[in-house]
Length: 107
Image (cartoon, rainbow, N blue to C red; front, side, top):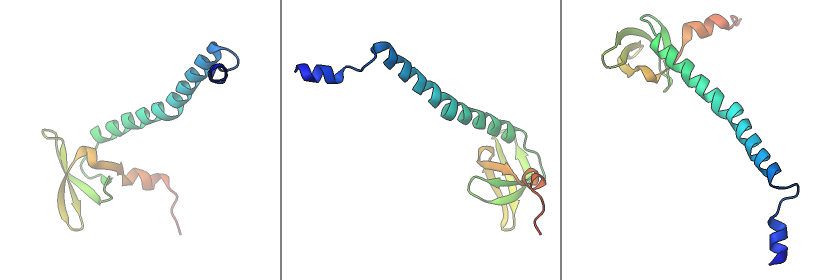
């Protein structure tokens, strides 16, 4: 039993264990949680700022142009080559016109 108790004790004392656990939580917060929160905040801003005529891509990969916005039920109508489809605003992933404006033209 005595050997088991020696094995479970960490060298350097208990304070170093608390510091290591605290350091791990800080690393997880700054490299995983905080960037995800920032992405969600930017996505909500984008979805609230969507305007008619914008070319967008939905989260399911459907490309289209916004033809109608309904603020009452938080939906929008997107015109695709197959016709008009009604989506939730939260299903819109990105705006194509801004994406292509940043990328250089390919030849």
